[in-house]
Length: 526
Image 1 (cartoon, rainbow, N blue to C red):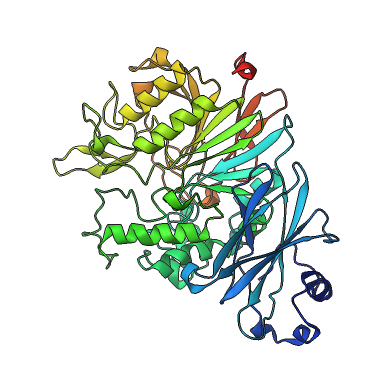
Image 2 (image 1 turned 90 degrees about the vertical axis):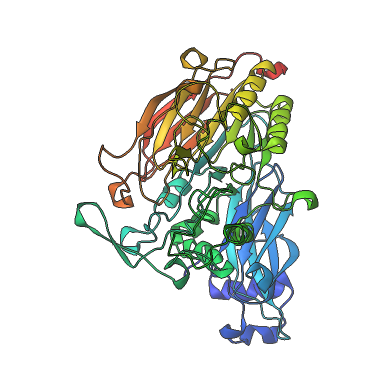
């Protein structure tokens, strides 16, 4: 399996002994079978002003060793002996690289050293990344969600998951994965009939041939995605910010979820499936652990100088059960973000002095997303919206948040999301809304990245959304394969004058829609 930026064999032997300083001369002749292998490559994640996480996986017990330098010859590298990669994490490991220079290109070389007495070192995997720019410089990032869903996996004849190459070529500073990094509940077959009778041929591994139930099957979904050369190449260059949604565990999971009637599952305990799915997500996400008080926390924020702060939400972990969602007063059953996360978001938005506050949400606010019917035969809902009319159910949290943003005079707030498997631009305006105590804002939807295409969805008028643009299958068509070309990602550019431009791009990187937003006057004085 090829690895991005793999150096020639002779160069590895020279730098492995002389630079890493952990291989004695006899180690050069160690059999390849004795060396650890990092066949999943590396990933960068959670970029900060002067630091980034680096992630990789070994095939056996070993220890991560990382070098970074400012030139690709690694003439003066910094070297870090990192964590152990053991069975408890599926041999994954991550290391925080700090003290990196702002705005520079950084080259990274990562190896694993075996834990047997031979201490053989793996062939290195290489990466390079652009650190966030200096204050006031232009910023570019991309986002999207939904990878390897609805049975549309890695098709070598199609060129694999090509959208990752299209995003890489845009040379973003970072990427936000808006959730559904895997489809643990979606088996991938060797061949699937696509639209117009065409055959879609998938790579298949044992772990993706059925729904994920064991911890190894959940982890195997992430290992499967990393078989794709486009994704590995992307991972080796573009730092990522991961969110999660439902398919990291099972479709539409909440406290109301049951798989009792789903014959595909022999494990019927949904909380145990959630625990295993969460463990696999945390093993494979290139995330910086939060702290000991909540080690599995996903919501967090990233500051990128005076132009941008990104607020990453978790709309899955703290929600109440999916329900008919029309409760007339807020209570535990209407929770979506949960009290603590909502307080954090309101506080951090009010404190922010960045020109733009981007809220990365794993689900849209105003689109109806159904989840079958409840025991009384009423429509049950998966997201926030519940149908036209006054604020009810989960909408109470968002009415509170939007009112807070207005009253605290938090300007220039933009929402980015995925989940619904088509791209769209929604403008929310109190003049069209039933609830009117908020300032107008934009929500942009991207995805899928490599999954079935659906939509368009139905908008709920509670917060006054209007679909200014959408690209979705024609009426009567759904679950279109990547053959149809309707795979989408979003791109955000912020120039040094604080103008923000959003483009919704297709599988080839072509812009389908573009919107430029000027910052509200006076943001510098907040």
